[in-house]
Length: 353
Image (cartoon, rainbow, N blue to C red; front, side, top):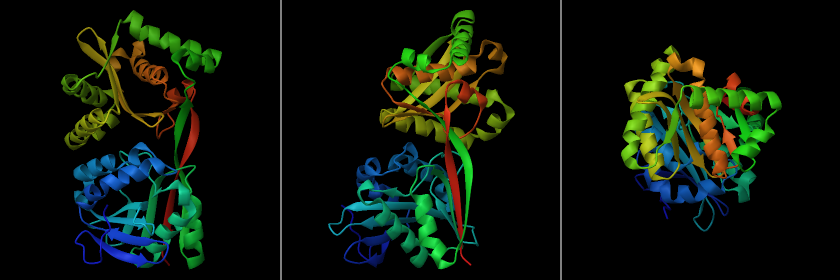
């Protein structure tokens, strides 16, 4: 267990009373040092998600954290048990002093305080009041808050009484589909029109083209599948090509390797003979499948290969017994054809007067 003292080189004691011990961690190694306890806390938190797990946050920091400095605040109970984390950072060149969540907005869809659900209101208040009273900042900019996060109300409670300005907006939506136990049960849950359209599009790809669906089964196949994924992602559109820089491709490769090792990776490529025509990447975490990204060759758009790849990933998730398919941020029309319903994602910006 890490129970740092004031003189520790990795953290500083901010507050200490009979109820909580609150500390600030600011060196790059802090994320790795906290990992064993973080990994125990995350599944017990009320907004547990793929993006709040320590391994993803460490990976993001390794690829993009060079422009930031850590400001991770932790709360421990009297026994020393870790019960709350505020995974924050500040840009090195930020003269305004803006605190934000580790993970940014380019490759993260859900971010939040990580709080043991046994003490959600108390620990959130301890984190937010400590951030308010002991950290220097001009703006607290919290992106990607899930719609059901208690942080939205807790920020209002902790900061409005102090005369700070709080701006709240719906940042985006994450369309989500419940999975009722099997692929056939999922198809039955769709309305007649959408069910017919999905089956028709998948026949165009699988039968008319024809194409075959291959998922990563072993480490040996990961390299070739990821090469196909990156090429297809870049080929999909000019916007996706601009997004998938060499640096971003390196992040995706490391992410796939990490998640494969953790048993979370769900990556498939649709092949027409020797040609890769579409792909979809997701991650199984808890009872959910997160659709992270996808791509296709526009030359095969008439064969609906893009929808087919997503549909096949969804089929695999349903037959594996997962209960939710989360399309993550974005309101692209195809998500609603596949039965998704919007879940809001919020942004809160607190400004000191």
